[in-house]
Image (cartoon, rainbow, N blue to C red; front, side, top):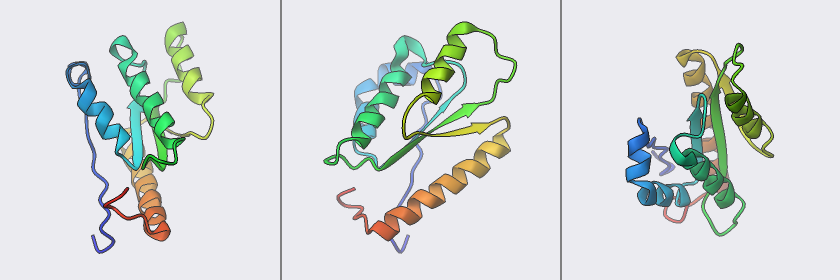
Length: 134
């Protein structure tokens, strides 16, 4: 708090939340400095989570946007054989400059997310990111 930096989660717990609030969700992504997306098997209904992911990638590549970094969390599925799910996972893994946090338990996910958020917060503080413009 002394650095005036706050990392806040925005959760979309079901597919209807993204379908019904797509514009607002996209606008939140555009004005975020950091973006983390959790996946298990697919891009969701009508590939809407894919669109959000690539919006975050696009924002990170635009110096005029506040996006500084992004990561995806991908639940381990060592026995997965479904071709579409495997293709989805490959597409994520082939992305350039993307941190993928692989996890099998919620405790593993929590540990990794805590580390990433600490790292990003410290990088923002060190870079002197102004929270009123970031």
